[in-house]
Image 1: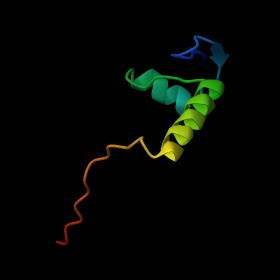
Image 2: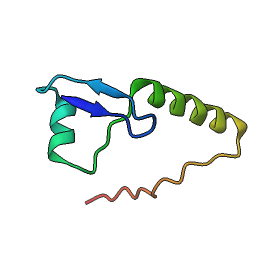
Image 3: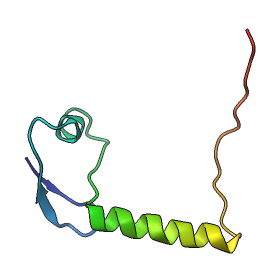
Length: 66
């Protein structure tokens, strides 16, 4: 299966039977990002977290005992 990175538009090929290929075929909201773009974003996110000015806004979890 040929796929294109959403950021750099690099065209890659993956196995048609892989779980990633199935996810991209069956759920159009999922997008593909190449390894270089993924690593670049992860590195920059870690750098922002290290500054102390960057916050993750995650939902509040409430652990309820039934």
